[in-house]
Image: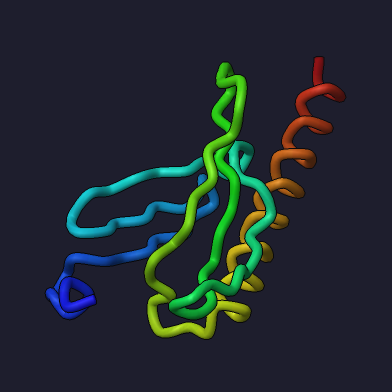
Length: 103
């Protein structure tokens, strides 16, 4: 856990495209359509936010556990991420509807 004290080693960026997680300076990007609902699981070391990542073309989803909550309580962090995920899904549906009407 001492690595969590290294400045700039961990970050979470949320956008309309997806979520970007940096852990120990390694960046992983997850697009909203490929992400399951965020959930909180309790373990020996406390609660963590987790989700499944299922890229198109892959047979099985990967189980992802966020090792950092970035100052949020895990339940609040999952709630915020799920709100972003829902907004992105609604925006994609609205774009698809307009695209179909114009064709």
